Length: 97
Ligand SMILES: [Zn+2]
Image (cartoon, rainbow, N blue to C red; front, side, top):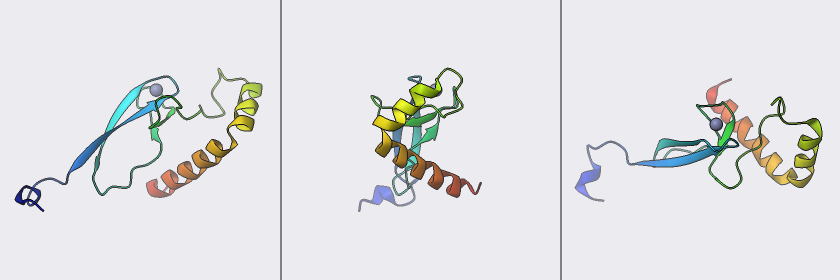
């Protein structure tokens, strides 16, 4: 409502994202922007999420993760996996891939 809002840049939030390697990335979003659940870590390329204690799992082609580890992860984290897939699909759609 204040006059300050007029003629100024849209209000922004800086939101942190963490990848599985613990890299923190802060991304600025306009207040009205649709914040993605995942962001590609600029340092290592892994997907990064907003929950520092539970970063998104590395993609299945990561060399250091064994197949068994991935299967285990899927079993215990099926819901998170579905959310991840959904978020990735939305991200890809937004990028027009
Ligand atoms: Zn990273």
